[in-house]
Length: 365
Image (cartoon, rainbow, N blue to C red; front, side, top):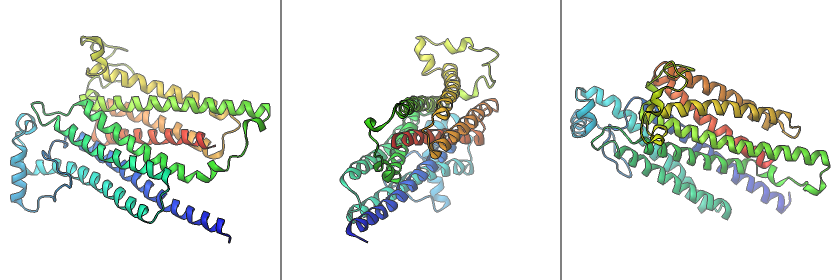
């Protein structure tokens, strides 16, 4: 084995360790989003009224529990909503928020310690170093946004701002996207570097297929943007508790567009702050997502240049969209039960990840 082969082998070995590290981070972020959804749906997010950088150990005695409960009683959620709570009921909401924060700090440790190890071992090149430093910064900002969101519910009104909830959720998806994209770049690095055909070397038929694939890529990017907007509106629906009104499908309260959708003044407030208006937008974008996916499937499977992986991603994306749409309808008509609500948020996560994967596969082929 020559020097070049040894060097390539070591580089691949280094990449494999970093890929496993990044994909582990992706899984933990997914778990964080799921537990965050359970925390929100069980109304547990305001049970911990203090935030510290390194966290704290859970209560170890009944005396400690009572201290925490007394502290919780000083805030609006207890005074206005949970004033009849027992200590056991407080414990049930406390644990979900505690696990959510604990997992967030665990993700920080999982990212930072291996990062310094890989850096010390000189396993990270300059290009990857820039990406990883940005990733660490994004992770830190995500934690700060979480506290900024919780803080909005510790004032006069015991509910978090739906804008801050959306920012916190989208920032988590952004950290995942950046981590996943970086991992995919390492996984498919050899494939990307192996491309040798230049446009001038292609015949007319190949050029036509290449243009078709570029068109599909652009359409997939647009689809991904729509998915992000839909996830943002999902957070608005959750923050405003808009999923509890008009639990009917396909019509809203026996109308395609009830008067409540435009009841607020000025009009724009309905679609950013009104329960009916926000739910209406969320419904409409869901239909747009399904229709766009149909167009992507049509163009994708007509293309002769798609490889097996890309076709499988397209098939998976189609399945996820159908399941997510169905889950959304059932979550609505059954008045947002915790199980369906969590499954619906999980579906959004997989839709986001698969859409990103499709774009990357079109990028590297």
